[in-house]
Length: 429
Ligand SMILES: C[S@@+](CC[C@H](N)C(=O)[O-])C[C@H]1O[C@@H](n2cnc3c(N)ncnc32)[C@H](O)[C@@H]1O
Image (cartoon, rainbow, N blue to C red; front, side, top):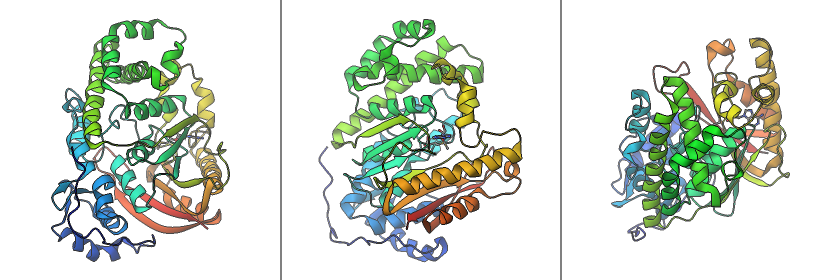
């Protein structure tokens, strides 16, 4: 496919500073883009925060940039954006044969959740990738800069950064998260031969994974040359968790999951090659957000979401996979933010202490005047009414940050006890 051509107003100058007003005061300005015919928003944009991000993208990016990296637009002057094309090329295998809840998560969130390789392992508590792309755009992060998620989970930030050619680092205390992030990230660059190879060796690899006491190196190392094994291992671990949740056998689930992965990666490869995407590199490490293995003033932006106190027990949640990978889950729990402590009071106090350490670390590794974006929500029932976003704000201001913007994002779904989360834009003084 030819690169999209720009028609008009290429010279529309984006604003330089990110000192936006409050959400409410921006609302009248939003109508200015909604009413233009040049910029068409994605069809499922309904929330105020999405409109607000669309407006920020419109302000921060040139038209060519909106086409290549915009997250909230369908087209510019009738030319479809890369985001729209990538999301539209998604494999139907992503939702076929899955629970109604999962189906609606992916189908309704077509433009925000499962595109590229994000759907490979729908990690609990993961970012909405579209939002992360929007944040990278608002901050105007460019190739050559380095972004960091010190609690990277399934590597959403790293995938998004790569998609726009930006370098990134992902750190997580959980070895399972690091493995998952590596596989999802490497799969962006995979080729048809590797996918065919994973499918061809499916049965043989399944036997190996079922029998082994210690994983062979090619499965665990997850380097580029071992990508078929990496994809197979992730599909195996995905099926393992699923089989425990729905009491179905692993050997019937595993082939379906692997085929779904293969279908999804293949769909992405097609559109990637048409668009000639060039990826940014990513580096992943098992590490502690409270003591980052990084130099002072070396990072251009941090975008992260810490555990929302003990709302999700990540050690318990990922126990089968962690144990399979040979990890001592009880030991890990002691190191995980939000999980340490005998009772609620002790857990909360440890949580805030750990958040303070991570905020200090973010401040230390960030370059001057650069941003740390923290996304956080509060489960009032669990925290006894304490709003985590307020506490995080208080800690960050004490530790050398300024708060430039605070955006509310509603959390949908009746099953969620949390109704909204906050996107906090902190700038290093
Ligand atoms: C809300 S999740 C992050 C999800 C991620 N943003 C994504 O898109 O998948 C929080 C993550 O913090 C990690 N974590 C908890 N304690 C940690 C620590 N001390 N150091 C680094 N990571 C930690 C957990 O393993 C979990 O993956």
